[in-house]
Length: 151
Length: 130
Image (tube, rainbow over all chains, first blue to last red; front, side, top):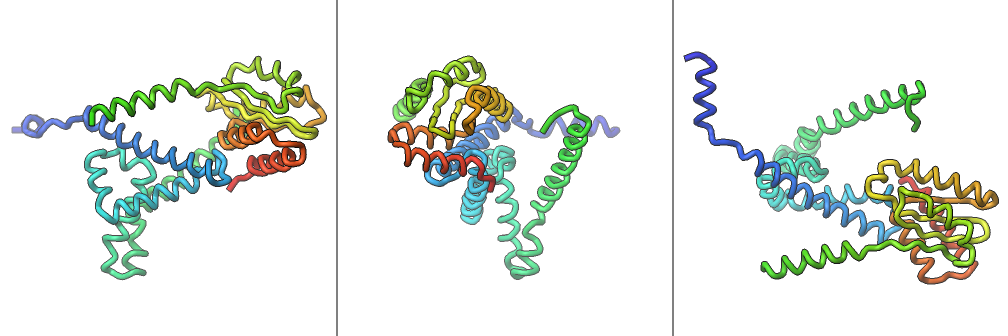
């Protein structure tokens, strides 16, 4: 029995991944989270002096705060099991990654435990977010200086 | 349970249909020069405007897919209005918040002094970046 035959047997025995249902669930859960975010944006615009451009900052903070409460009570885990990527891609997933790491390492102390491990998962998000923003800004600056596009 | 869901869906779909945008210029007697400019814009579906001695505020509702070019549309309309009113300061914006603020001015029918105050407030708000 060579490698390919072995792989074929494994593929036959494994349960089939319900791709379509997963995509549908992720779409619905992600859509609900984003709708809640939009409602929070409208709330800040209606009752506080925020415009469309500036209301996104308090909205992100509020969503991360809600994600913190849900992570602490264990509810976010259930949402993530149902929604998959739909609950990981919005900013609540980022909040969940930070807060669950903080809770996990609380027993090791506040400085070396919580402080040192809080960005274990989310650190790569921040690093590559900054890096890709830098690269995109660099490309745009070059294109603007060449006169292809305008700011 | 099923009935409530159906009723909720009906309310949602009905309220979405009745969301028609009207075109208002306040005060009405100054609208003659502004109206033709706004009418020939095909990337917006409504506007609300306030005019006083120094300023023109125009809050526009940009079509869903034209929102990608929001700044360009705003600049284009600003230039056209500035040509028509060279002595006034023009602010054209597609921001929903400004739309609401302009709407409150129109609904309250503010007089000159208060009007000037609220226009200043809106202009400050539109400059806000934090």
